[in-house]
Length: 180
Image (cartoon, helix red, strand yellow):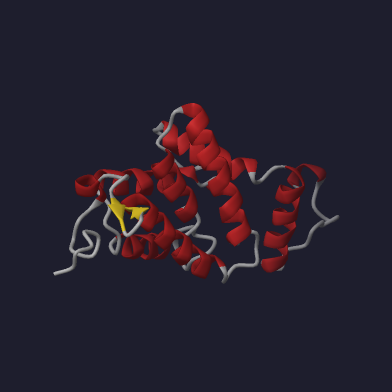
């Protein structure tokens, strides 16, 4: 049996975010694992859903969480993972959610934290405005961070990258003015 509570089946509820294991907290161990997982997953994407996007969204989410009084751990983990199940990046939303849940199954997360993170990820995607409204401060924080990354020069560059990766024209003069 391992002396490391994370390897012996402990979870963050039992251990607390601040429990120190080999010089790092249990929460930081999960965040490190998430960074590694998402870096590998996002390296497959050249459409604006890449690691630099995840880094920007995560940094914004953590800053907003501190300013707004949201749980910074939940916001950081949800921001890191927010594009993993995106249906634009997977065969389907279901396939993406399975990939996310498979990874979460490997982590020592309390079910309440896991449910919060999955709930955030399930509601923050733009998806043409067809998703349910966000239901928590943490979801608002992560959604705002993701949407802020879609603004300005970076947002324009991400739009071009996404369109280019999908073989879409930047401009189609044959479309009626109101359809662009």
